[in-house]
Structures are given as structure tokens and as C-alpha cells.
Image (cartoon, rainbow, N blue to C red; front, side, top):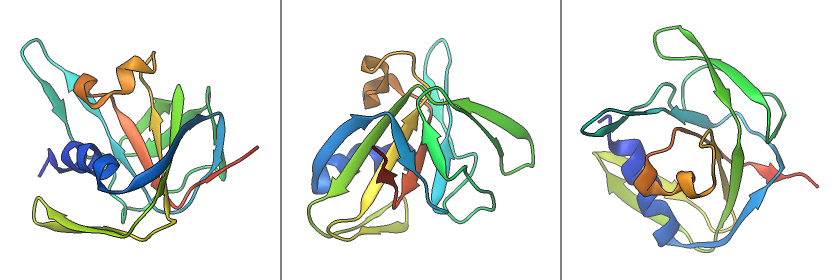
Length: 141
């Protein structure tokens, strides 16, 4: 189950996203999750610190350069430095199962990924970056 989040995040872009862009600030929602990754000498391991249904809130606005403090599943306070924000809009309805869980999105819904990677190149799935994923986010001008 620990590998579900990275698998989902790898599959979603190929399942109907049209608009993808890097933005400086977003408006958040109450539906978000944290997927930290650790790089070990031989492998990378990603998990879930907070799932979409877990308690907790984000600031109403998040911008590149902000530090987000959240509580993980065990109640430990953690910080996440936002270095890049990627915004997606689904171009069609998505409905699939992965890791025994059903995942859906409707045409026009949005998703944002906040990355702590130092470079945009480091946000690629092959790099296993830690991320916060926010459903139903919006771009702020």
C-alpha cells in the first residue's frame, strides 16, 4: 500500500490531463494528501504521511517559497518547503482501480502537486520527489 501514491501519480497524467502548467500560487481545498519519499543508497521509498480523508488543513493560499506544517498519521509535526507547484485540469472523466482502491476524477476537475525538489527536473516521477497533492485547487493570478 505504501507504493500506491507514486503509482497513482504516475498513471494520472496519462489518463486525461490537458492543461498542465507550473504556477506561483494556488488556492487550496480540504482534500489533500502528503507523499514523502526517502532516497536510500540502493532504492527510493515513498509512503503516505496524510491521506485525503485525514484531518488537517492547509492555508487557503499556498505559494512557491512557503513552508507548510502538518501532522502525519502518528501525530508528528512535519514541515514541507514548497519549491514548485504544478497545476492540472482533467480533460475527461477518469475511473480506475490501483492498489485495491478506486480513483476517480471528472472532466474539468483540478489537481495540484506541491514539490519540495530543488529543481523542476527533480519533480519527474523517476526522481521520486516528496509531494503534497491537492484536489480541487485553483490558480491565483
